[in-house]
Image (cartoon, rainbow, N blue to C red):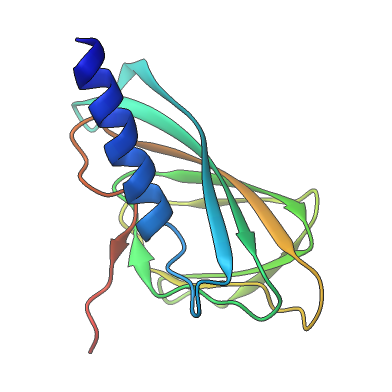
Length: 140
């Protein structure tokens, strides 16, 4: 049991680190803060919640991706540009929150500033058997 939990934690950690923000030039950092099983089911599936901190350097943008569950975000520092599906992009400042519905296309994820760091805290609800917390969108 302990080995399974450790393996799952490491797998999700590497999945988050490798896939959450998908930066250019490796100029960001994704840190898993916690992962917990929760009793509620998400669309009938056993569910986990993962909390990550994403740090983006000036001008850094992630590649388009989707999440297997809803995301609740809070901007800790700086400004964060978010674009989901066909909605207009929005700029969030430190202290503001945002929401991403399950499976939406997270097409813009960017620190729009020329200087300064952006830090975002994200809470992701996801099926326990999810292989990735951020699924890259295929290039067109």
